[in-house]
Structure formats: structure tokens, C-alpha cells
Image 1 (tube, rainbow, N blue to C red):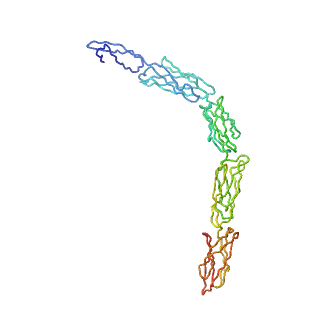
Image 2 (cartoon, one colour):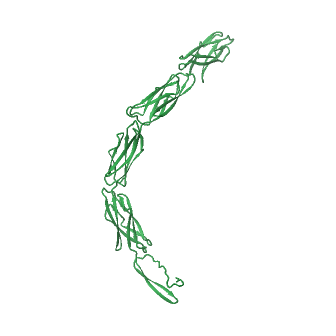
Image 3 (cartoon, helix red, strand yellow):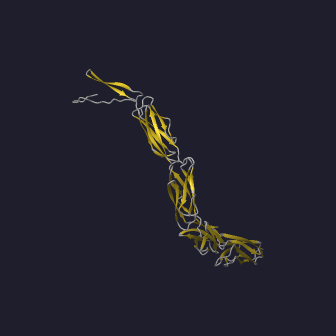
Length: 419
């Protein structure tokens, strides 16, 4: 080392390593042929502390312990003995501190208990002992949870009680209660031994208006609560079956709620967007039911008509579309079907349901000029058929004429033979 100019002394560091037994070594210094020496005694590291983290916990959980030396462990390391004063806290028999290290960690495993306990954890190395105190608490009620926290009356919510740690042997019984008769919970929920939570079901009743309920759980002197909102049933859909009918036929409508109707039922208002389909002014969903049916009656129409059927409840509306079709052409007949040229035949067109107000116009045509028909005929309102005359001319040879009747996209034909 160098002693600085103007100085009489200088300092230096002597680095040591861990030893297993006390030893001495001479430190020599020389300057210009003159030597001086000093003796350094190196002692083995001793146990200085045992620390627990955390120092208080719920039985069934674990704490981390740390043993520390006054210095580094020597070659081969050091083995520290461990003991616990209470069987509720278990430690390994020993913990090894590796060579060159000054500390090591270990785990204190605890068991659940019905009463609070205190355990002293003791570490020993040689003649030195160190100890730390661990407090083992009983599990308490941490929370009460509900999922979902908002339900339509008549539906249920899944509840969970959660402890701060595992339940001891025999389990723990959490008492349950509800602040309203609109929601019912079981009298208690049992958290079985070794578990930290238990499930239960909250059943609700249908309500006419939004209702706030508090579900409470109690274990010992600790009470935890969770809010539950019970909603009145809302209108979720309106449907029709069938969705397409011929005018004059009916369709069955269904209104569906999000949950059961309360005592007294729920009145759903109904309306139609077109007089071609009529519905009652309202339909009542009975108490405890979540749907009701009604009849949509239709009138005969000349052209296909889309009608919107609307249901409303407390400002919420749902709608469905009903397609009302005109009567379909069902048949065309000729009588007689064979005539001498120059004679007439009577044709009859028939539709599947009564004609609408204003009648239904049917187009007619013939494939031969020797058999003529009017361009159109009109089936009167409320009727299902009409007759027309087919006039013929004389022919030199046997001839056939196809008579066609058309309504919308539907056509019917009949063959007339002329001789």
C-alpha cells in the first residue's frame, strides 16, 4: 500500500472468508528492510437472528422464515436446527446455509384452527439460539359475493362466501340472511375443512318495480354483505307463427318477458301497423308466467302486404312482421271441355280464400284464336270463384286451345278441344 506524501499512516482492507473454526493469521508490513506484523483472529459466523414474514397469519397458510449469521458460512456451509413450540406450525428439522452465504430461508406450514394460537419458532446453531413468534389466527369471513348482482325477479343469483383462510376440521358455518322477502337465501352455508369458500343460491320473486336487497353473511362477530338488485320483468321479444298467411287466415303471436310476471300479471299493449291485420289492444302475462299468446286476424288483400305487429311494456317495445298474401289461384275448369266449333264453353276460376274488398282481378288468355276469352274477370269481394264464357269458331280439323288464368305469379290452365 502507499502512504501519501505528508501522511504518517495509511489504511487497507483485510478480506476474510467464512471458517468452520477459529483461526489466526499474521498480517505483515515491510518498508526499506524493516518489518512489522499484527495477528488477526478469524472466528466462525454465529447465528444472529430468525425472522418470520408474516408474523401473523390465518391457520392453513404459510410464513417464510429466514435465519441469518453474523458472517459468511465456511466451507461445507452451516446447518441450522429448527423447532416449533406448537404442532399447528410445522418447520423442517434443519435449514442449510450454503458456503459463502450468510442467510437461508425456510417455510413454516400452519394448520387451520378454531382458536387463535401462538407458536415459537426456534433456530439453533452450535450454542447459539434465536427465536421468533408466529401468531396463528382463526379464519374469518372476508366477503360475500353475488353473481350476477342484478337479476330479473323469479331468476336466481349464485352466492359465494369467502374466508380469510382455510376452514379447520369440521368446517365453518356462515349464517345467511336477506333484507327482503323478494329474495331468499338458505339459513347458512358451510365452508368444509381445508376450503376457503362455499357457494349458495339466492332465489328471487317476481317484482312490479326495481327492488334493492342486501344479502348478509355472518361468522362469529364478523358480518359481510352484498347488494342484489331485483328487476321487474321486461319485454324481450314478440314473435308470430306463422309469419306469412293468406288474407282471412290468422297467426298466433307470442310476447315473451325476461322473467316471470309478478302477482297480478303484466299487461302488454298490442298494435298493428295496417288494418289488414288486427290484434287485441293488450294481452296479459299471468303471474308466474313469462309469456302469453294472442291471435292476429287478417283480412283478404289484393296484393301482398307486410304488417308490423308491435308490443309494448313500460316503454319497451318489440315488434314482428306478418306478411299477408292475396288469395291464391287454386283451379281453372272448363265445362264442357270439348265443344263443336262455334259453340261456347263455360270457364270457372277458383281462389283459395275470399276475394278482398274491391274484388280480385284474374287475367285470362287463349293459345288459339278460334277460342276467345275476356282479357280479365273479377271475383267479387267475399266470393271465391267466377265463371266466364269461352267463345269458339268453326274449325276444319280437330283443334285444342289452352286457356290460362293468372293471378299474381300463379297461373292455372285448362284444355278445350274443338271439333
